View 1 (cartoon, one colour):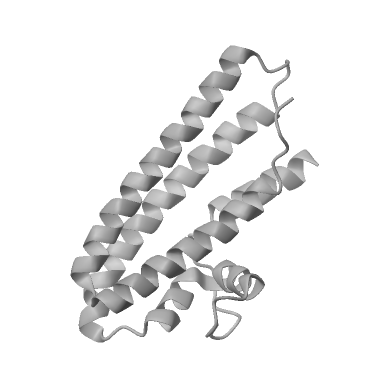
View 2: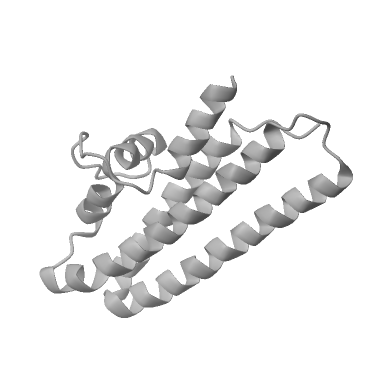
Length: 158
């Protein structure tokens, strides 16, 4: 069980890292399972297919995208470490440890939110507003699926 949980948490944290585009295009990202599969195959290719950027737009967008994905990847890895420390404790959870854990998770959420605001501002300047909004919406859908996958594997503290 522990190995499965660690594997799922690590997989969720590393979804920002592209692997290989195996699915073909996902035209309708309202099917969350199709979205999940496309992200696992190659998130960058999914974004490219969804946005259909011109060469000039791509030149401005991809560095912003890459920087944001690196930030999210670091935050996700830190979140995995925090959850692992909580779940695999050798002793019962104390009130102090619970407070530290929740404080750490909130700090990670705030770090991610700052990175998202920075990325949003940069994307809005780099792309036409409709394409920028489409990307931001796609990123939010991806985050929602990833958050659900992570939450479904983590039991409540006792």
